[in-house]
Length: 58
Image (tube, rainbow, N blue to C red; front, side, top):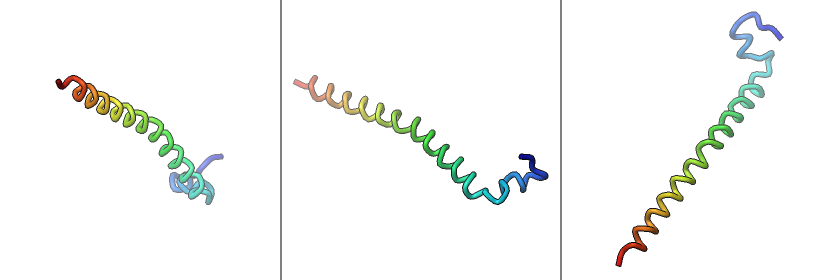
């Protein structure tokens, strides 16, 4: 499929809502696949640091 202008490209043959929402959803899922494990790791490390401080007190 070829487009005659950039606005035709953005319109995607009158399917722009579907196409760009699919791209947006895909990018959201990819971002969550990176962000959520990093947050979980940070929470785990903070929890373990608190536990170790609590256990080391006499």
